Amino acid sequence: MANERPSETKQLATQGIILVAASFVVRFIGFLYRIPLTNLWGDAGNDAYSMAYQIYNLFIIISSFGVPAALSRMVGKRLALKQYANARKVFIVALVLIGSITLVCALFMWFGAGFIANQIFGVAESMPSIRVLAVTLLIVAGIAVLRGLFQGMNNMKPTAVSQILEQFVNAAASLIFAFALFGKGLAWGVAGGISGAGFGGLAALVLLLFIYYLYRGHSWIGSKKADAKYVTESNKEIVKEMMLLVIPIVLASAVLNIKNIVDSSLFLKLMRVKGYETSEISLLRGMYQGKFILLTTLPIAVGNALGTAAVPSITRSITLNDRQEIRSKIMMQYRMIVLITLPAAIGMAIVAKPMLQVLFPAAPDGAALFWVGSIQVVFYSIVHVSTGILQGLNRVRIPIINAIIAAVIALIVCIFCILLFNLNIYSLVISDIIFTAVLAYLDTDSVRRFTRFTVDWIDIFKKPLIATAAMSLCCLLTYLLVNRVEGSNFMALLLSVIVAVAVYFVVLVNIDGVSEEDMDNLPMGHKLELLRIPGLPSFGKKNKRRPAPKHMHRRPVHTDNNRRPRTRR
Image (cartoon, rainbow, N blue to C red):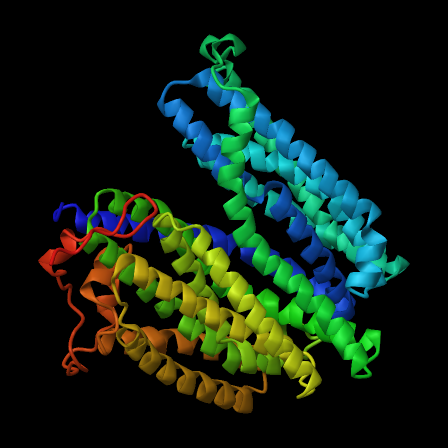
């Protein structure tokens, strides 16, 4: 087992890097097409766009969000047992069940669009967009079931290819229809921009159906062994199993989405009490959603991907009751997320003003939001990684409970910030910081309790903080110098970012902020040694791989599948 440990951890790191890259590419495409859209319709359009997407995301979660993960698990389990007929029936039952739930959600969105737009969000311009997304909801349901089927067959290529195609078509269609319809008014322009989600989804659905058609003649799907006469499970049994898998995923995701909807609606009502006009409130929310949330989502995607990658690998280590391997994986996950997101958060705050001027020249306001709230990037990413670890420990309900507690605390803080301190849009930013900080604390404390392993956060943050401080100083000085000499905001921003990245990794390597184990686990990780300056003395104790105490191999990890052993006296 000791010989397998480095390769197991390296495999987890590699999977995490792949998922990070894929997730970042998809989100980056989504970010790119939002730039011309924001310049087209400004913060008011961003508000209408974001409010429509908030209610759409909620119904996506309710109808089909957990389907790919649950269906892949159910199909994969039956294929492993060679129960091809049962696997095919699971697919058919999922289509009918998810299709029915989604139809109800889509009808609610369509006929309730006016109430949602006017009464909940106070943005009448979002009503056409909500109806466009109601149709998109039906398309996404079919995509979710087909992706779950292919993932259950242990084939991730259809999912990956369809996601890339979906995002490209989404971007193109959004730009075309937004600019084409904007002349008819803001509401039509936003609806045109949001229609890209439907066109992208339709392209992905057609591709997946074509792949499914090809598979029918060359796999178990179309074989005689999958005939209905070999089915041994009832619809009721399949639906029950599916709901048991889907509901925890839905609840965990719905808490955050419901919090966002409550925040948006509450902000509108409380700001009206303070005497603000609806148009002013819409501009503030649009600035918050269309710039702050949009840009901070990019580094947060890193934590989400690493958390997803952690689940199967940690589950395997728990099954083998290998505490040293669990410890190694947990430390590696937290180290990687801090190494990536800490400089991203601080760097984003430093270049916020010139960044917005370059990206959104028609609506550059909002830099102060990043000065106040960019640190939430680190907290959010720690939350995602901790949630993945807890899921691997089979503690799926713990993140839900923690999220509810954090959401209640954040909601109270938001109300006080608006009513007592008159902080307007900064109230939402502060509420986000409180929510993510409290949730990060609760989740990491849960990881400590269930693994009986205390993470040394000072050790994890100490050297990345030093490197980030050096990076920040060099980034700021480079921007001021180049902007003064060249007079070009874009050139100053570009060079300051390049210098910041270079300085961060050079300093990090030379103060031994990257351990030998990190270099082993990361693809081409030892290339970082090229950044080491010869003859420079070592700053502090070098981070070498340290074996865990022997007793850690014998102490079982607390999951729902085992009990804590009694202590003999």
